[in-house]
Length: 194
Image (cartoon, rainbow, N blue to C red; front, side, top):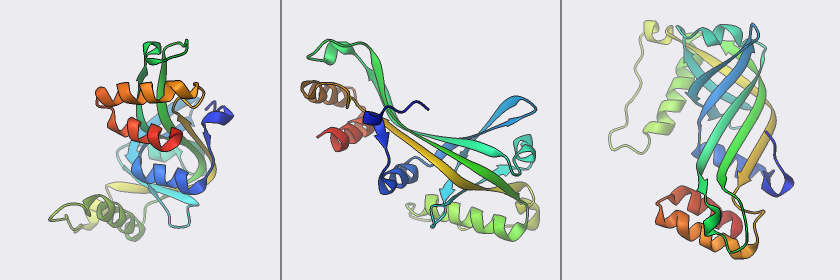
C-alpha cells in the first residue's frame, strides 16, 4: 500500500484501536500463482503479535496457508470527496482509513484451540446483546472449521483524511460529509484534523 508520510499512522495504540473497531478483514494469499482471498472476522492476541481467525474446512483456502506469508487488509469508513467542497482548487478524491498486516500463517485443527478461538470471538461480538449466545459444541461442529494464527510481521496503516489539503478546506469537507450522513468518516476526520 502506498502511504505518503502525511497519511501514515505509526502509533501502535491507534493502529490496534482501529483494528479492534474494524476487525472484519480479507485474508489474502497466493497459491499456484493465483491470489486467493477470504473475508473473515479477526481477533488480535493480547500480546499484539498475532492475529487469529477461522475458516470453514470446506473452504480450500486454508489448505494453502501453512507457513505462507499473507496479507490481511482492514477497511474503516470511506467516502467520495468532491472538489466543489474545497475553498482552494482541487480534484475529486476518496477519503478512507485502511490497515494492511503482513504475517506468516500457522493452521491448527485441534478441537481444543479451535473451541477457545470461537469462544473468544463469540464473547467479543455477543457481549453487547441482552442475551448473549453461549457456545455449546459437538465435536462434529468443531471439525467443520480450522483455525489460523498469523504472526504479525509488518503493519501499514493509512488514514487519508484530507491532511494534504489546506486547513481552510477541512471544515467544509467535514460539514458536507456530515450532511450526507457519513458519520464514522466525519468522526475520524475530526479526530485527525481538528
